[in-house]
Image (cartoon, rainbow, N blue to C red; front, side):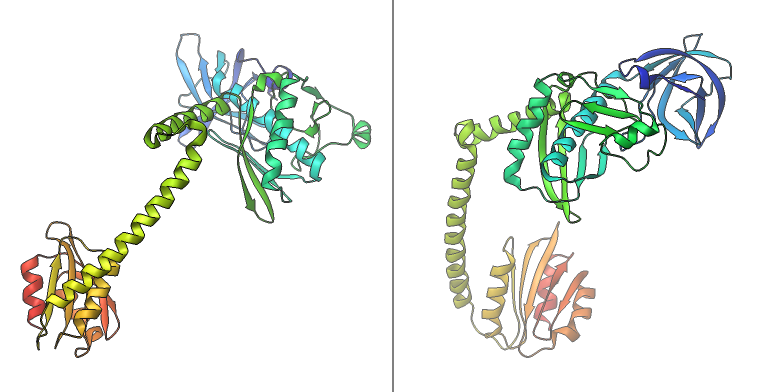
Length: 388
């Protein structure tokens, strides 16, 4: 049985150990040590990573850590002989970040449970995000107060206490429980905030978390999914958003605290311009149609650029003037063309397969109108349409 050093000292990030066994683990190797500070994946938290340093100085990468059948398996990129003394070194930045996130999750979950009575029914601590699923709804307007209280617990620098109550003591203890923990229950207590069964390493005091930020709240399976960032991740998130705000502020010539209002003004102005553009485009389309004479044959227009609405309007107008078909193509020989074709005389649904074959296109529609795309050249387009 491997001694779990992370249970007694969560801040231990270097240690010595002896290799008990080494076998294959998929495409890699699986090492079992007599003692380890590497936390295996579990309880919603990703595994620690790092290196094992051999007596000859060789560094063996610890890629993953899993607990299987009571054994802690260190998945490595190299084999190490049984009996070898090694020095383990955790990726401390990752481990400390994980502890910040996990203790932050306990604080938020404890506060949610106290305020609403909801349980945390799903937890994921990944390399980039932390999500919590609660079995009830939380109004968005409650988030600022919840966040304020969570950070109040951080600023109070409360002790994070780990205990192993007896079965009798557990019966008398009110705590949030994770279903996978059935024996040797490890209780993590943050006084006045949370009491929860948990197998993962945590910070020693809440002040080590630094900051808790709730970054997202969405409806999920009858409850809500909350995303948080804690500690260094919260700082990185703030820095990214601050950089974005600075850029938006400069682009809009607005104060940082007024960027949201400036964006809304831009949206309103853009909508007004778009409305005018659509009106003018409609008038131009009408004028364009008026300049094209009626014919007993087909009408074919090829434009460099035209949106679908204008193309459809023009086809509808020209269909009244064409004895065969009215076709509008938009694009170029290099990138291809979009097309809309209308007719009152020709069954376009029946023609569609032949047309797409001739123009290397794809599309379809009704007997009166078809649309699609074609990868051909303008000369071929005109020759084919005028030949209908």
